[in-house]
Image (cartoon, rainbow, N blue to C red; front, side):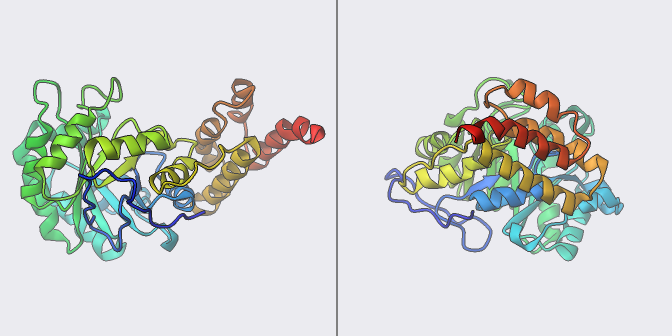
Length: 344
């Protein structure tokens, strides 16, 4: 289901909505983060139905885009129902980033292009991509300026608070990126060396909000609707980007929209509803990614996430991780629900 724009009556007095660089943004947008192997078209569509206002692609290699690598270009494809959407690119060569941005602009025409300066994965960082760029802010400056020159679309950035604790200075990083031409700034308030450990520093997001003239989106430790509201109230950010908290839980967007608008929280999805959405997601994957064994194998992780917290979930996941077809998953779900149906 798609829930409309949210009200701002419950926002704190200091909260000032800022226009993000895509058409008709709601007062406080909820954004699906770009995540490798997760933020693919099927999941983006599920999250849009559930209330995500904006989605982003998985992060895509600029070198692969400029070389027209088919599998990477497929990652930039999307359907109209996913709009507004940003395509995220990464790389350490300003010319390659500019060429990739121009190609994406011409052939895919998303609402905006986002630059990844936050990915902590070793194979990306080893090539100075993602958060590896934070070790050279002159390189960051050149990349942003090159991408801005290469496209008429708004260019946004997603980054971390620094490479490590010694170089942690999110305000200086944010100001440098704003000056280079970024139209919005998303901060995952951890350093690269933290990876996903510890707590994200929402105080740092608040300081960046105070320092910048462009919209700031908060990211990090958003596991519930209450977390979304707390981040808004604590930081004054212009929107919230939800990442790992949405794994198997696209209802987080629905619940966040309700709480932000002052509506009662919807009932938590029961097993039947979880299974229904999981199967809808799976069928989208088969349609969009191909009805192949590989699609099914890669979808197993989603089935595991959708079943978290259910009674007997460990045994259920063991069975689901062995499936060879989505029909097998549906049969397992029906068998799981059978005792409930008999009681009813």
